[in-house]
Amino acid sequence: MLKKANVIMVTSDDAPITVTIDGEDILSFPKGAIVFNKDKFPSIKLIEKDEVVTPEMGYQRAYLHLVSEEDIEEGELMLSRDEYMVVPTPPKVEHGLKLLASTDKHLRLPKFSKKFLTKYVESQGIHKVFVVVEETLSPTPHCIPKVNRNNIISLRKMKNLFTRDEVEDIIFEARMNPDDKIDELLNEY
Image (cartoon, rainbow, N blue to C red; front, side, top):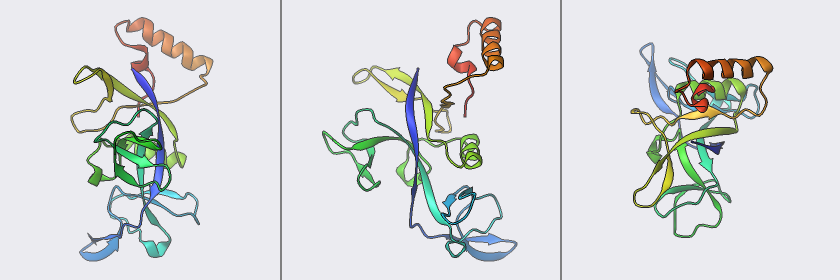
């Protein structure tokens, strides 16, 4: 089953770390980090290996959060709509977004795939996606995001318009593989 979710980028004042490049210690944001520079285009960048990116270059650390507007249960993490800060969920939350995944490792939430992060940076933002969810019955019936053994969340592209060729390809694949679910045939991040 698929559920709608939003990807939100939140900047942070996290300091760079010391990395060793070619035997030299340099202050830089770590490999795999997402950084943002409001004065440059492209403004969103994914740090690749052996690349020095610092606050002095105008970059600021940023985290991606996958959020939904579904009910937040006690003990879950949420993103406050007022301050965009991660806070533990108090009972009966009125204004907040449920956190489903994050690039912030400290939150211990599911991660985004490298493929999604690359597409996010290439597109300079992806704001709406589908999350693949599974139903669970314990302790009460509800849906949880599907993750693989590496704790990477399963996402699908949210697409409103398809070309005739794309529709024909999807129908052809569905006929050739009748056991596959149609949402499995759509592109995955």
